[in-house]
Image 1 (spheres, rainbow, N blue to C red):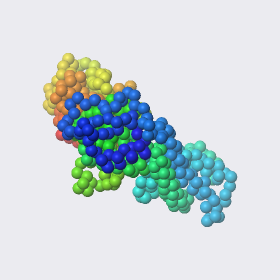
Image 2 (cartoon, one colour):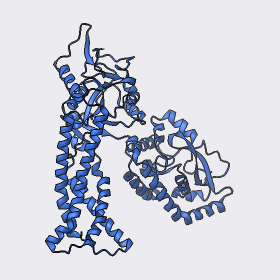
Image 3 (cartoon, rainbow, N blue to C red):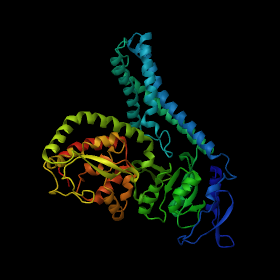
Image 4 (cartoon, rainbow, N blue to C red):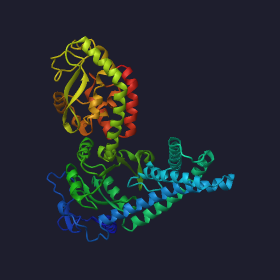
Length: 530
């Protein structure tokens, strides 16, 4: 790929002159540094092939630092930044006894120092796991606001000290009372905040200098060859401190461009796979917005981070609220399910833990439900039915039977007042107690506590052909409850709205969101459906 100096020179040359050659074609440089003629007409390119052979893209001759070396330096810089954060938390903890001894005359004993070692090692975990360590490529280490830093910094030592106190209580250790009391905590925060700010400023300066030298730069593809796309390319090349190096465009038009055209928007998944580029900026290309949404979703197998320039940003869209600002252009990070993939094991672990506890607590209720089903109708207590889960895979869902046996419920929709519902079902269905056996589906790994509700294969096939984006619901595990359900959409309600809410949940998934949905499910069960 083009190195920073090569890309910068290429852009300067393009801005000085984009005069056509003797054949009426604008001269651009492709990813291998050779000269290529690209037509300057503005008609859509019907059979556009990539400007370069994407399967064999070597580093350009102008590249002084390879991509692997740039990324290696970036990883080292992040470790240094993390070390500054860790030191800002750990140093005050170790210095706390000394400050307390000097100010209040507290005795400084080896026992207290041993206690502080527990606090110290707890600080290691707190510092490494603190949310402040997760920063995007466009965010410099010092980009967080002062109030945010104060809040995050205060959280780490407080949690560490409280954890050490709990450990002391559980183990009944012979340590003296903690030296870090209210006075100590206030001292920790007062000392740690300035240390974090100083560390962030130093690491930010180090990042800027390193990126200006051509290191810690990651390649980025820009979708859109119009004026905004070109502005984004120029802004990123002229501001290496943001750490993104434009290497090419993707669009249906081959206008005058400072960088090569790699292909069409629909080819983006293949382009990302073959080039190994991990960042994409969406900048008003020829593709329709809904088409772009589908293209991004089809990039689920790639680890690329997507950014977008918001529409109507000229009217004063707040970059502070949306994300970052690069030379006056607000750029927002676009979340995808794949971007949270690292947290899926945590979601599964929480499912098993919570579902296990709920199963134990609900055993008496489930026994009562089973007895009610047995006494009010003939047939099995449990109802098993094939549903469609993650990736379109079928599985058997468990429920307490609430309808008469031998009814074909696989292709019939249950509505209010359905005469197939049993006497027990008239109680279990409105209260959703018939769903309790699905806790076993969660424990078996077929479902999650929170996710889109699973549907029957017949209706999945029908809705997939009738409703746009219906199949995207199957990107994540299906759930007992979900975002659509806590908004009142259960049973015989608008499928289109449920699909929109389900996909909204998927695009914005987090463990915190799952917790909120779980808590909101309780009052939702007591209310009326839409």
